Length: 87
Length: 336
Image 1 (spheres, rainbow over the protein chains, first blue to last red):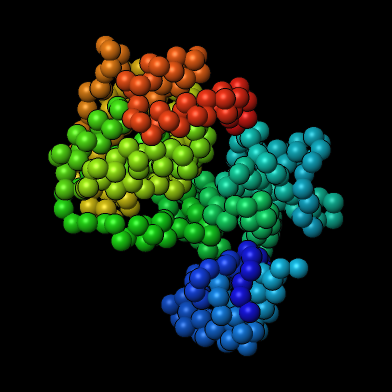
Image 2 (cartoon, one colour):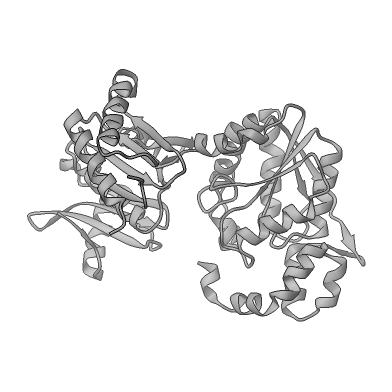
């Protein structure tokens, strides 16, 4: 699966995250988080896991996180990826 | 519940909330959102292009998630309108509230803080890393609407006095000639100058963000605040990243706005160890070469006179596109 278009999921509420996707040549994950220092690596691991599960091989995923728990990250990334597919 | 405020009476309500929060109402906006609870308006926020503005939450709701809710709705609406990179101007004391929502501080003065969301200036600087060279480098910020022998002369002069020259072409598309063409003509007109690098300003110099009144052509609205915002980004981020020690500009005898900008550079840049060098303007047939006089000649049909004012590539573009440019010039949308 590749990211075919720009898409967005999530909100800016506390304990939530915003996910933005866009097409690109490689696979890139950019994470901005208010808890990056403590949990940046765990957020990245979770995003990678979801992308891997969905077999996403190409695209840029930008995350703006406000301390979301991992099931929220899972749901938001999955939604954004599905929205990034051409109808 | 969040809804678009579309009627005059709703906008009036929003205005009251703003004024009650010590903020001014600004009629320039594309969309206005309101958050209603039991039919009462408790939060508002507006957007004009990629700038969020007029955000206010009623005092008794400030410690809730409503601020995040309204900003979230504004950012999503901006995203859908094609603006992935948004900015907000706010009072310095509210900067932290935006930072909690992942906005990044860009610059601030005593009265205004500017923050950005989606992308930030580090992304912009990283993009150009590969063309950064060591040495005593110079910077020039130019609109080049269009590129003339005057611009060429300024770049040549800088190139002779520097190891590398970085020419930042204003990316804001509010000029007669579109950005893509402007930068292309600068590249073609400077191909032979090996130590000159042409790049775009992004939203970080002479843009609607850093210097809104440049595009309003209204010198009375230029505030020191805006000039300082623009120059603090140049001095704080751009110059250090590119090793820029000198900034060149042409003297400005005609346009009061540009003259004020030069004046601000003369005062501000040396405080950051950057020399400001003003070059006497190049003339042709006893007249100063300026992009505005080139545009006038083109639009009044004096095409032959352009030969002495602009390089070949610019001349070719202007003469081949005279009709398109003349009709674009007649469209008032340009001034928005």
